[in-house]
Image (tube, rainbow over all chains, first blue to last red; front, side, top):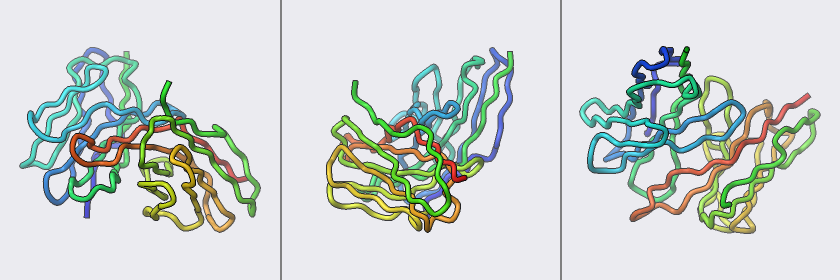
Length: 115
Length: 116
């Protein structure tokens, strides 16, 4: 069965420092991986995706993520955090076989960036 | 502009009442989804539809019903059979997957349902 784990409920960083939000997955075959961000009482916004190719993918707002097949991880990163990056972040996975389009989401990680 | 519109944004319901949440999209997407979000539990799939007049149960379909009579619309009814309906409900859509379409979801702004 497909699954996604975000091991940290909350990540705290100081503004200007690098940030990492962790994600590991379990899926048969080569996965499609996604990161979304959610601000309070809003819908989710797409940040970036990994489908194939370069293991380092770049997305919106200066975020990037690194796909590591051997560690089954897809950690979200940003070189220099902003206070405005504070939000809830979700990792999601979909197996490429079949065409249901269903995504399996992690439980979310709250990122708190302090001035 | 293209997007997904959910209404109402806030809804209060008495126990024993059915309520219907609206979801409309003008992105010309084939697939539509309903998720429920509870604190600390991430998003759980209620129902999804890949094409008009067809839909499938997700992981937590009990106490919910949907219809897909039009491509643009995918309303969700929360019935009185749903034991704990207070939650944040998110509608999403996507292109059908395959080829260059990788199935990322586009979300509405959500509807917060509170049962009094």
